[in-house]
Image: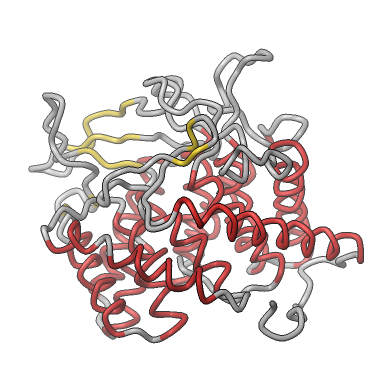
Length: 388
């Protein structure tokens, strides 16, 4: 049951009755399916749906926050006490990774969608404490010489102390939140310093982005790039482009610094100019494409969320361009990639691609693709929950 009547929202464009009916319909399908699949998924940290069933990863895995994040998005809009209780238990299950200091550069993905969402919706003090602990550990990864947040730990024979990745642009929202909560700008200063490094070293002139940029950890000097999950070093991994759009938009929302807004528009223009006909990207914009080239529906969902937030802060003409593009992406994901009619599939959105280069979860539902699809539809409904 809804918490009162459907929210009246100030339209970004002239919404039609047909559009509103579609939003309500897809939201109801989301809620119905999550209520059903939650019975099995339970207290879990999934990454990908394998043969129709979401897997289980360790609590410190970077995707651990997305399943409870879906639950909180629904709880924010619905009287859904069972889902709320489940989200709280999922959050509590992550404590081991927090207290043994294994928090990494993806702390925001885990703790913004769990503890911070919980705190924003209920004022829970233990959740606030968890969020601040995670923010402090994320801040400890900041390299003052290079003004970047280090990615990963060492492994596979690599010293990765000088590596930073585009994904971290989403995670630094945890630092902005910590500054707001503590009334201490130091967290925000680190977030902005990292974002400035991204503008300078990651975002190319055409609006595309590198996935991995390497620095000398002692001097901060840039020493090179790596392809990461992209087709090549100089190609354009589509999920990375989506992180750039949404991450820079978030930086503008938190700081009101125009350079982040301009960077977000630049990244958004590149993304939209390179979309295929159905508005859902392949896994890399520059890879040679044929009928077998994997899509990445998760990149489309992430970008749509960023485009909606970007549209809100732009003049009317630009606003309509980005908002309408976001709606087209979400409608295509629903119509062409939705798993609504498959009772044997727990995922919501098909054809997500985790990592083509490692042949990991290619053309499968991904929990973060599902999350951002849910978040995008919640935004269209007028939800006020903003975890980033």
